[in-house]
Image (cartoon, rainbow, N blue to C red; front, side, top):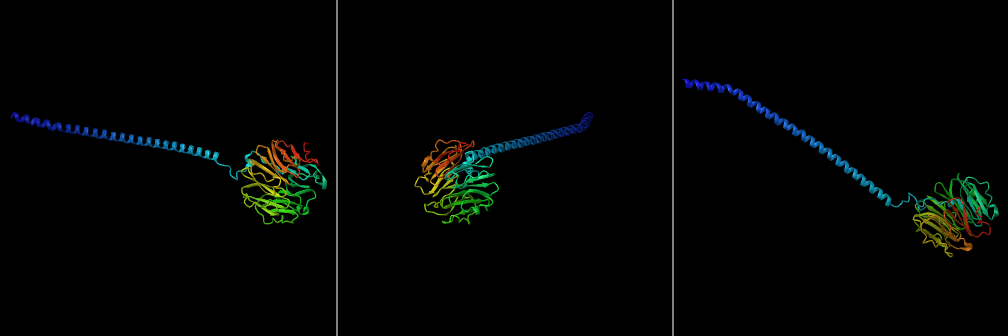
Length: 363
């Protein structure tokens, strides 16, 4: 009986303790679950933080890479620009030289010299027959040329003349002229739309230029007219008695000038070509380099270098090719018996025959 009572008491105590143990076990399991959940949340947060850090790092790396790529591209571009040659559109040898030759401002004519002053008026010195020095009233002159006369181009595109000019009545009607040149019997003019007009004798067809287009420079020989097109080719009309029209193969020309029976072309690389009569060596320009301006006289040729020095070849009668000591020159003009040059300070120098005082330019 007593044993039964003990067993009964033990059972009762066991049953009484079970809810406590179960509750304790439940609380333990809940605590573990909570701990696991919190750990998972912390892990997730850490993962997200790591992913954000990684994303930021990757973005920074991409930005750095892009910056480096940009820097490399810039460096390559700058190097390419430094290495690249100057294009035709960017300019010619004369622009690379740091100044623009001003040949249009002076004219060494047959027996006199003429020049444009800074105020647009014209000065002359030399033989004054046929009124070729009657230029005192001229104003606003932009370009000048002449032979046994003086011909000036005004800024409004009209032309003025002093002395006897073949075809002068036609020249007075010219309009929109932007360039001109003359020889003994003809005057050639370039219009603003790239077409060309010629006045004077047409014995050899030197006035047959009506079909020329897209011309940017003109030159007038004794019996031959020339026009430089924008693509660097040269057109011609008139006499070819000395081969002065054998220029079909010329390319990359940026300026032209004509003597009596020869023509000279300046190329964009600063070299020079010439065709026609070469009895006096006026076409011996093959070895000239670094030239930025040219001028052809009747039987000699003058070239201006980018450093302001001058070279000459051809007939040296009266010493007109003795230009080796000239410096600081910005314009050259070859006349019949003399050579004229303009310096950057506005002074003039001349060499050759002074029988008509055409070299008295010191004043």
